[in-house]
Amino acid sequence: MPDVIGGHQGLEDLASGLFLVDPSGSRHLAVSDLPATLARLRTPDAPVTWLHAAVSDELVAALEESGLHELAVKSLREGPERPRVEEYPDHLYVSLLRARDGRDGAPDSEAVSDVSVIEIEDIRVFLGPRWIVSLGGLDPDELVTVGCLVSRQVMERGRGPSYVLYYLAEWAVGTLYPVLDSLDERVDSLEDLVLVDTGEATRQELFRLKRDLAEARRRIAPTRDVMQRLSTHGLGFVEPGADIFFRDVHDDILMVLEQLDTHRDILSSALDLYLSTVSNRLNEVMKRLTVVTTVFMPLTFITGFFGMNFVDLPVHSVVWYWLTMASMVVVFVAMMGYAWRRRWL
Image 1: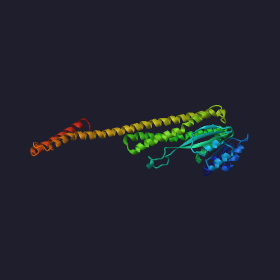
Image 2: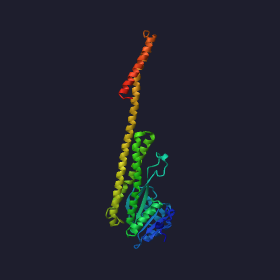
Image 3: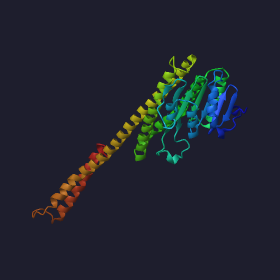
Image 4: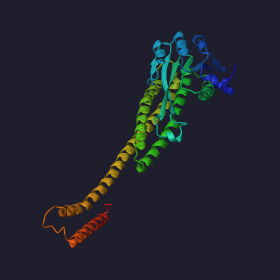
């Protein structure tokens, strides 16, 4: 029997088909083998088995043939859904999620782009008395990592499939931490950026990051209720000793949500700082324009007064001309000096 986990072989095959882990080891199966495999697992003396596969039309059809509840199988065709737990007569349906940094590998020139900061993907789980089937969410190398953990902590210790669900949930929550660290760096950089750059790109990044944080919290928050229900005594197909493990994941989710709330509050403060900076710079511009207007008001009066077509005005005297010009220069210098002393400029 080939040991995919031990040898780290066949990673390219794990992205499609079926990956099986039981007390005897791990191996790769075809999706067409799923109904027969589930039928064998429904026997009372069947070993604890974990099956994982990527979601596909062939897989959904195989799950329908295996007798799983039609509402749970139907949700696989409907795309992303809210994390939840549904208890059926012969199995438990659990919807989880994992996160990725949506800008990993993006060029620096695309630091401000339409790429989402957080990408959320679903993990669907069917939990039976002696088996567990998980769908989607895991890359081949991640599947090998989790498979090693399941083999060591569940299969070798003789634990039930609900412990496999725990390690899947723990791994899924663990995918949130690198994204949160990346968010922390971006939020800090934005806080510094709004003080020196109030351009359109900064404003767009502020709103985009704030929107993505709100969307991430909306998607992640229901996981708290999922873990709370799994940690409740009496839920079918969850072993009594596993509830404390799910409470630990519940605490981790609470910490993630608190950190998301903190980032959202910081971004709101950064947005307020951005708006205040823009307003202050606008006030500085308006103040300088007001000073210029005030300085030229006396000059406008003088030129306007002597520009009137009255016969008795000394417009034909050279002396009055130079006196007028001198008075304009003196008024201009005096008002500029006054504005400088008051630090209006």
